[in-house]
Image (cartoon, rainbow, N blue to C red):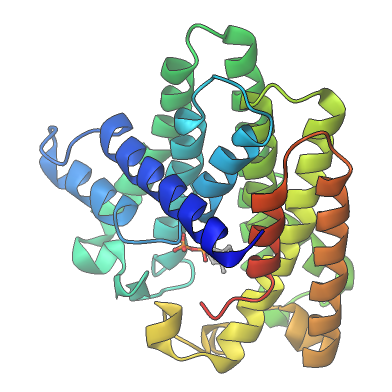
Length: 295
Ligand code: GRG
């Protein structure tokens, strides 16, 4: 897909995401206002919206009439909660997120913890309300998201990541962290979009696998950026991985092997997408961009 067409579609998806986030989540004035302000502060803090955009585009690939907005918002709610909690002093202890003070710096630790807590059930309520007339779809989406965000993937990956470099440096542990902490939510973005789009089981599985490969590649790019980018580009402190003694692909295998793996994973992701009956031009370009981003 040429760059102008990609940009035009991307802007359209981003507008839909921002509108859906505004309309499907509680206003900042909702009581208790400080909690809802903190939730919106982090939700509106200008992330790339990669997961919701993937979700909208994945649904569009199969041309259904069902709105993908609730699924997209649910993904961003979970992602945002995980970032808020990840920044807390008891985890990565980061003062900067998305180029602004992280939630616990802008508010306070207890409010940030609770804002994350509240975004988690909100994600599932957005799904139950958004797909109330399609209970089978709602159940599948809830199951997919709960699995991705649960104890064996997102939270599990984060748990093993907390061990840093001091613990087990086995490559299996690294794969578990990559799959859980980063790839699971990106994979769910592809698969949930495909579900909303009414894709076949096989195509949903292919989208899930494409997202998994692209998701791991995305994290490897993040690791490289952490070594090389500046804080303004990254929107968060640089060198944090080394400082927090993170167990990363680059720390285990080095930069050239990391770059080679990004290539292999990207090729794999594109092959999974190409094997489906969906119109995957936009997603193909997006996966290529995920592997070649400057921020
Ligand atoms: C606290 C349960 C729990 C999980 C935290 C998200 C996370 C897991 C940790 C954040 C640190 C990190 C590098 C995670 C890997 C996923 C990742 C690269 C997140 C950042 O995603 P982007 O770049 O962020 O899409 P924006 O701000 O653009 O949405």
